[in-house]
Length: 488
Image (cartoon, rainbow, N blue to C red; front, top):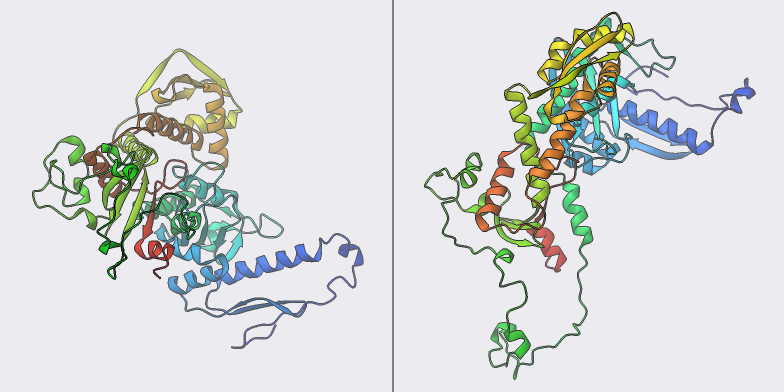
């Protein structure tokens, strides 16, 4: 390495010439090359203003130009490393609390991955793989992703070096914070704030996958064709003197059904003039009198229902297809969470209080969080040196395994300092209840019901994905449709 504005060049040759025994423990050349490339990528993420070039065996494997310092340059660098899809579906993260700052980008829930390979965490510019940070990332997306899906995120944590120990791992891959609860709370809060601000937005990859499924056909139809008596220069619209076949004179099956279409004019109340009045149609309250063209709403106006499950809506510049069950499931789930946040959770008393034996340290940790657990409907108290007594449990959990629940909570408190197990179990129950209480697949919806559902989606955060991270709607732009028919 040499100093100066030229940067630095590192060349490695015959690394194990003096220690051939070490060479035997190396993996294949391909594996080692991938490890080197991955390390260079991590350094490039942390230093977007620095250009990087990686050459392996004389071939350029990676070339990254320098970007402008700041969020915009960082996103361009991440796009070059993780792909353009990440750039299109990333949410900006920038929050600070008590001298600790979190910045970077996190992907939308519908832009999830099958593994955690696209999770990069940095502490003071140093790449780390820390269990607390990864657990906080999982906790932030707990309401939006199934357990087998993982979010994509690149997060940078800036903290006073006096409050973090970087010498707990030989390779400095792990760190230990003086106040882990503060760091975890900052990560979870910042990510949830960004996800809430995203509203009903879904990832662009959903539409791309849908477009890839279309297969335009240009072959000749094998069915009966119309036979005009004479062609016209005006095209098909000018053929007026042809005889319609008897089969075609009948109404096509399905097109005369009420559920298959939405008339452009209906006798219900006026369209709500703002998404905030989304519940008016469902609750019967009178919305504002000034009508607004429904095509101007983000999710447009309902035009029909297909297979008694999919709502087709027209927007100003495209169309939207909504899974009515998945969309309403998210709406019900968010309503239940809001009710839990507003008041205490309904509890049920055990016929016989249950004693759970734990390690003395674990029992003390659980008992010290009795107030926090009580807010979630779990009433516990200390019962001797190594046990806790459980008197009441959340009613929504039903007949639950109290012993297993308390032990899981003790493990979470030891590892993360928070009772994640109880929160996750309650979230799962809320999700199950929301699933059973939502509009079912196969239910025929009227025009007002379909449009009311669209308005509620626009006014509800996170409505772009169901409780398991699957998209609730697909939006296709007009130019995408034109491509299918060769108009572009």
